Amino acid sequence: MPILFGLGIVLYAILAYFIRDWRWLTAIVSFPLFACLGFNWIIPESPRWLASKGRISEAEDILYYIGHRNGKPLTKAQVSLSSPNKGAKQDRQYQVMDCFRTPELRKRMLINILTWFTCSMVYYGLTMNASNLGDNMYISVALSGLVEIPAYIACIVYVNRAGRKRMLCASLLLGGAACLIFTVLPKEIEENNATVGTSLALIGKMGISAAFCIIYIYCAELLPTVLRNSGMGVCSMAARFGGIVAPEIVPLGDFLAYLIFGSFAFVSGILSTRLPETLNQPLPDSIEDVENAPSGGDNAKVALDDENVVQAMEEKLTMLDAEEKT
Image (tube, rainbow, N blue to C red; front, side, top):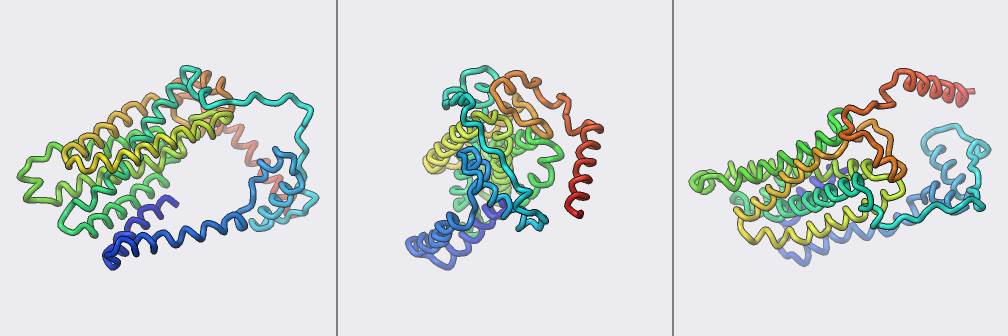
């Protein structure tokens, strides 16, 4: 799905080339958003949310519908959920400030906030500045969208192999290094050979696009279940501030703009090395899970790597397949 971001920028550049009036261009690219209004009647409600609200029958109907659409030979009798225990003691209600109360969680939140801010600021800043690169602003903007596609493909291929932490750090450092190198280009090269500067800017865009893609997964896996929504909301708000700041940085000129973009990306990449790896690690449910997690995470024992666990899971899946066939 992130690939559509890059394709959208390319399509926007093509439309802008043929539609020079910005009012008509804005109206045309905004029109497809009206289709989103129909999602309320197409996308089913979350069964887990319905069950938590005591709407068991509706949750069971949706689960049956999902199984039926996925080709599972289920009957409605097989889809049975238990009602929540209303007499049980209510769980503690967590607040946003709980994201910062304990040392390890506070460290994760602060690094994530900076990283989200950086990703948004650099991503939108480089996208807005793309029209200033090269001789043809339409081609430059289209190229800034095209370079995102290999970045997203690399994330899809390697994020479950190299790990979230390594991919995020490498992407941020790559983007930051490209922007910082842009600032030290000799004047003669920048004026006589625009290809070098454009290439560095596109490499920076590729790196920050990959980082922006990974941070959504990585941040959610770093936060405990009880605070995941609140923590992601805070980080997303930081990203919006980054998007607000980006248009104010671009007019400062290439040197200052790329110096700011490169510095923030490089610092964020270095700080991200202080976060633990989450690949194949169990998601933390509580704040205690975060605080008691092994430091670093790379050398922690992974349950899914245990041959006995994997074998037991395979046997269970085989039994379920046999039951479905009968």
